[in-house]
Image 1 (cartoon, rainbow, N blue to C red):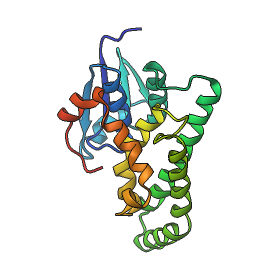
Image 2 (cartoon, one colour):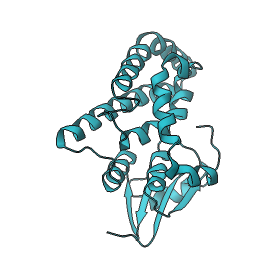
Image 3 (cartoon, rainbow, N blue to C red):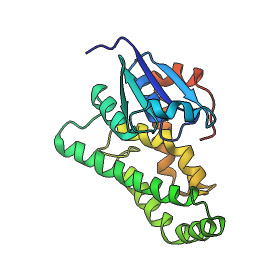
Length: 206
């Protein structure tokens, strides 16, 4: 099924939106890359399905939820599993990545600064090391990919949020401490299908 008009709406950061942009670029789909700031978000928020971003709009119909979008685009562009069991493995490991992100986000967006630092210290000692070591091991077993030993949409999700995750984790040596994680990122960002998009996209820290 071909599309006539496609747009992707998200903040002018990578975070949870970059996977959708990367997947559209990988699939060779022309799309309007609509980026907004925190100042303009209040105007855009009511126009989204759930008051959240990102939003993928296809021929006038809007779709939300970053992982639902990534999973759909993954299927469309041949980046899903070859069997239901492979899809299960992709979902399983992607959910584990999302667990790590959620833990880090619970610290990053804690409004009480004292509690925030206390949680960061606790998680840095008792939560992050085990989770990141496990993920590093998983990627090592999957040839530099998140799941099933090959490129899947889950790699795009992880690569797209990697800088955002690094920022929230506050682990400056993440690349060297867990080197397999950076391999996922490099494997995605070196894809020739992404060259034009990456050259044109605004540079974002996270």
